[in-house]
Structures are given as C-alpha cells and as structure tokens.
Image 1: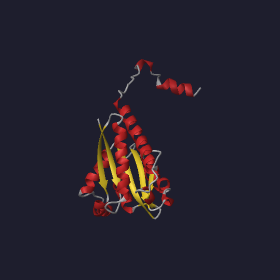
Image 2 (image 1 turned 30 degrees about the horizontal axis):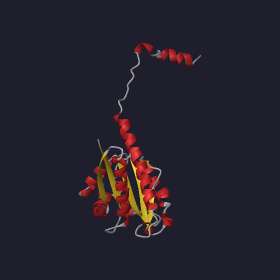
Image 3 (image 1 turned 60 degrees about the horizontal axis):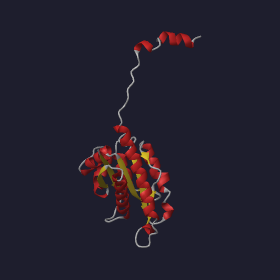
Length: 210
C-alpha cells in the first residue's frame, strides 16, 4: 500500500527557507519509510499561490480553484508535514487561513510533523506555543520532535545539527505511520457472545438494589 504524505509549506518568497526545510523533512521521511519497505507518494502544497483562493474561502466558505485539490490532498494523506515562517511570534496568516479551511475532523488521528523557520533561534518556541496547540485542537497526532531552522542553519556555515534534527523527526514520523499501517493490516478478531451466557437485565438491576 502506498503511503501518502501531504507537505504544506507557507513560504512567501521563491525560493524560501521554509520550502527548503519542507523539502528536507519530506526527503528524510521518504527515505525512512522506504527503508521500512513502504512506497511513498508526496503531494507538495505551496500556500503562496493559494492566497487569493484562501481569502475567498474566508469570505464565502467555499473552496475554489486549486484550493479544493489542496484540501483534498491533506484530507486523504496518511501523514502531514507542515512548515511555516514565523511572523510576530506565531505562524503566518497564510498558514493559519489554510488550516482554518481544513475540515476540523479531517486530521483526526493523522500523524503531523511540524516545522518553522525564522531569522534567529529566539523564535524557536513557536513550535510549542503555536503550532503544537493548533494541531492538537485539530486532533492530529503531532510527533515529539518539531524542527525549527534559523538562517544560520542553512548554507556553508551550518553546524549539521539541523540535519540530525530533520533525520530524528523523519524517523519518528515514519515509525508512527508504519505502525498505523501495520495495525490497519491486521485482521480484526470479532467475538460474538453466546446469547445464553448474557445475564438477564432485570437480574442485574435486582443485584444492584440488594
């Protein structure tokens, strides 16, 4: 069975550090899942081209154009990787509008890997005080390791710690997704009680009143 990953990236420039981090997380997750014997299909959802569609959705409540397909990709995904730039100590407005448009039950039980980018590391707590509560509200299963990347984490001067965080997060996502698929593939044993062994309801009530 092919595992579908939806990668949501809210970078505003082209190219962007947000998309770069999303690509790294996606590639590492694919490697981790393929090493477990799974085929993987990745849908990358760039939010920047969907800005007008998202504004229309906020006003009308209807998904139009490419937004409809993007929402469908998230709904049918086995896992989601969600990455946003940090603006004013939180996720971007574009990022929030997209997940406001996602049906509130469509991520129920879905594994989610969260990531964020900013100019400096002082914004790193956004993963815990903004992104994790958002996906908790949507009833998603947010993996323990979120990945924050500052400008210094990219380029020739990077220390390599970003790569290790990416690999750790991807491994956790792969383990959770693979475990979900393993459980869903197991036959469900259904036990039907013998009606003759079922206590009489009136006898049960009588025993409680003694």
